[in-house]
Image 1 (cartoon, one colour):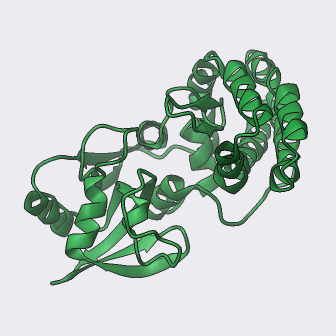
Image 2 (cartoon, helix red, strand yellow; image 1 turned 135 degrees about the horizontal axis):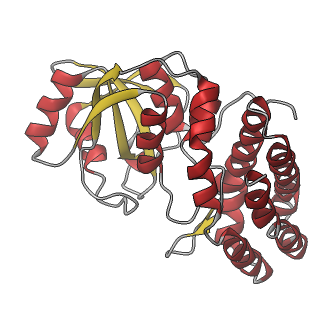
Length: 290
């Protein structure tokens, strides 16, 4: 098992790591529960995270396991949300609609329903200053535009708008390894959900040559899923869960093999890779029981 370092769809884990500073971002990602399953949302989009999981839930779990507390607030008017943001910075903010974050060169400039997390460092008279884990430290947006992104009208994975986490405080010191051991019952719980069926559904989508699903898996869901599984394998080995670590590493290698099939539009090969991968998730669950 070899660690990977680089960019990835870990905006929430990176943002939390900025707030609490002394915990490796890869460990935070594992503590959120994201590596332990796969799902296809009601809209047909596939993800390599557990059925019913979403980052807002994962953040709360990771914060608790690491011995920290924070204040989570949401709702209210735009003016009220702005006041909470002014008084709470630095703050973990999200989800925000990534389509409205026009400091990113590739932004479409309209709400797309894609969720993203950032850390706001200050609010000036006319702008919000924040660290965007997509590679933009101390970037800015006009206040009105940032608030529009925070309203998150098109994001359906979590209820509420203007969600904010402030006042981070450590209740007690928890070594990362102890937090990971304490997270294992939650990991097992996520893996009891039917990820195998979800991956078989993804395979059927690809067998039908769905171009939209191919692009989504190639551009985001597939690579982030590989990284999550690889991080899980590294941290499971660190807490002597060697059988589960080996299964996670095997799943990561299998899923990593999907990328070229997707980019070369070899739909049948991509579907076959996922069909072979699907039974690995029950095996992963069984390995965590040993």
